[in-house]
Length: 169
Length: 223
Image (cartoon, rainbow over all chains, first blue to last red):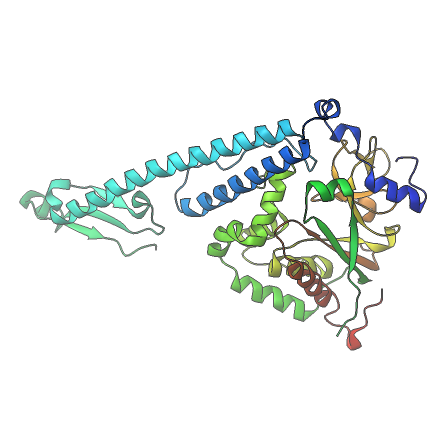
């Protein structure tokens, strides 16, 4: 406990005091650069990236397998420029990785949508192929399955059809 | 109608200049720990029915919840690891299948937080000396008393009274000021960050106060 905390004056002084460790050494030496403005700018960039990150999270559902965590310097504390820069870069990298992964998912899903159309048009060409909602980036348990009508007989006769499930049990 | 003054906590100038919009509001009222009255439990049930996975999914895009996520990032916390107060409660709602009652004070905090998205906490008001403030931890300052006290690294953002740090701005609270079975007066605090409107902060505190005095006749909320 700091010694100066017993009076009202000391309390006011405490509120105004900035611990030396909260001000990095480089900042203490350099007086020609407005470090506060740089920190403010970095915080704005972090805010922007965080909002993008959140938007990606919402649009990624129900897809799985994304990494959302961003290494953080630890807190809660006043971060210096170095930490803010590292955090900004990590966040930007995470947003970019997620965007790329989402694009790849979208391409894969688009391909599967095309396959569903082809499957419905000609089930015999896609024997036993099963495409689920998850494969086209949709929630739910619906799937399209190419199966023979009347089991073995249909298989021997080449009577294939697409069975569409009604959804989750 | 209950008449409880909402007080404005001080924010150290270093924090004010670094984080414009950072604020602290709190109200002190008579409220012990104990079971919630039926009305509060009913409200929790109503909120549970109103809240689904879809809202949870889009929560982080809502303005107030998003403002806390941004602030968490800016102070070095990963909100996907250290959840913001509203996200922590929502996650618990999804896990438990509803907002479960955990006693009068916890329930009041849950209601205040969920209804507005504002980060709230309660501390034992009889253990506070003077007004509350947000400031930076001082060299060698500790959270709590005795050997188990957590050493606060310099520059840590803390909630404090006029004598000592009472807790981290979000998270850990000193054991001495935590709400316990002996608590008779409670201070409900709302931490405001940039992007959170004043009206939401006041609404959060009023929701909380109303839940705490829900079964009192004549609106007696002694300060």
